[in-house]
Length: 285
Ligand SMILES: *[C@@H]1O[C@H](CO)[C@@H](O)[C@H](O)[C@H]1NC(C)=O
Ligand SMILES: *[C@@H]1O[C@H](CO)[C@@H](O)[C@H](O)[C@H]1NC(C)=O
Ligand SMILES: *[C@@H]1O[C@H](CO)[C@@H](O)[C@H](O)[C@H]1NC(C)=O
Image (cartoon, rainbow, N blue to C red):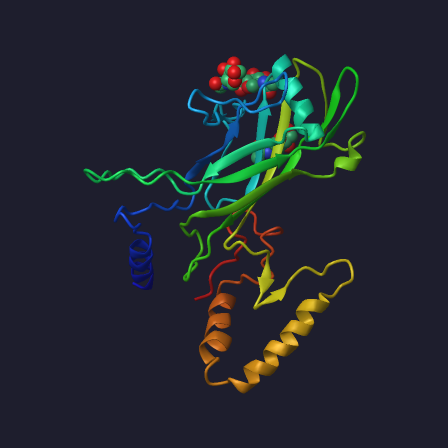
């Protein structure tokens, strides 16, 4: 019932000015990755006749026979082997690794609307950028690529969040891990033209644009073990909150309790929540 109301409110809130409802991704919905087409000679982007950039699907993965895709809210490990690195693609990889031209991709922020309102123009599809910060080293005849990449995906915040939620993309980033271990690491590929390129992705989702926190406190231990700025800030907030006990009841007690029920804390979606999406542990309602 509560969910029905939340869904209704969410639905109403997503009506655009033109009264066209903007769709959200359902949990598990596929999200296709498109990348900027670039010239393998110069690394420059390709323009279409109308001066628009040309976006093409991410290369096809041998594992699925389809271009790389993520699934809304679904965390886990993904393999994507590009079966054969052609000569032009090898040269593009050189640009990517030197960051002369990044591997610039994008994700649709929402699924494409499929309800057409007669006489109304569908709203333009919006995208969020996803740059794959690919690390490696170039040698005369070959290159070493750090093929394990983390992928962090953020959703726009919602008033009511629950497990296996639907939603809209807010932002994303991806980067090679352990680029310094490129000679020894198990996730390093020595690549020559004609080789397969085995990428592996660790995909994690965050329910808001923010990094993990519990009840307003940063969870990271950091290198020093303490986050001083936030400690000072929270002492101040506690002091003010003390003056506003009644007014703060909802924010200070009810909301944290609700969030706690969802175990966003300890949450590090970066860590242990593999499998159930969002890094939440089970609801305890
Ligand atoms: C990307 O651009 C190149 C150079 O213009 C072109 O040959 C190639 O077909 C384009 N790729 C796709 C998938 O359209
Ligand atoms: C990905 O590939 C690695 C190495 O080949 C393999 O051990 C692992 O099980 C694969 N993971 C998935 C999710 O397919
Ligand atoms: C691609 O997949 C096919 C069939 O699943 C397999 O025979 C082939 O060895 C794979 N190629 C690479 C480069 O992984």
